[in-house]
Image 1: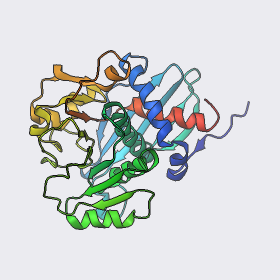
Image 2: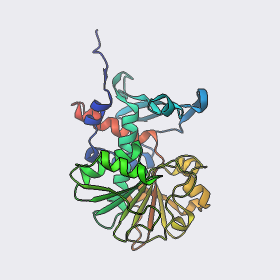
Image 3: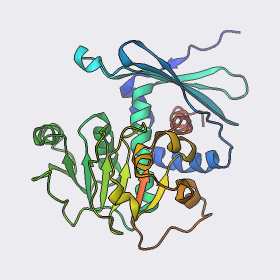
Image 4: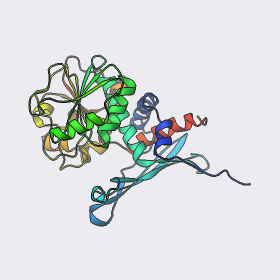
Length: 311
């Protein structure tokens, strides 16, 4: 019996198959299933490459689908004029093990990460956000800008870069969207009082946001993914309710929380709120930290499968 050729989707096609609204809904379901151990997502395997690069192997399985994300992260690629991340996400039939399709790895990672931030907004924000600040001007900042544009098109977006020129260039490149995107006039000043959502998207080793916590402002940390990295300062973390996307992974990767010396018994997974097993703290500042896991890539593959007519 001749099997059909496995479909391989490039970055543009992968983006079309994974719209943000559907990703947010799929991540909500996957977060609950993962917390209930109905999705298996073991700790990722990290293997060294040349010149400080790493190969990451990240499988996940559920009764309806299996996936394997295999990506290479090579920090020196910027000097070569190449993307930092290369790789693929393969989806498999959970019964037969047959390959169903292959998605572009960096695109899946970027879009499901931004969608997890948007799930955090939907879960923790007191109201639909009106003003975002994105701290960072890289690929993840662009993914988040796209997600905000799709889900919160009436919101204003401010951008803060490692240098004012970076923020100005980023905003200039993405003007003409259906929403406002502007660089902060004074990146060293306190953020405008009207900002209700801050999303940090850097690989900094020094805090890029450390204002006093406030119940009216949700703070989301995305970029720091090693114990040495930190974006959100201890001042913000100390008096906030703390939530993460993946409780197991955060203990090893959430540098913001690790360097702040948090008591991990006080940190909760987002699934606890999503499945109504704990009430959302009222009038309390919240910091939501995401580190990612393969269960979120499985959620993205579910969305793609549905778009391909295989749901």
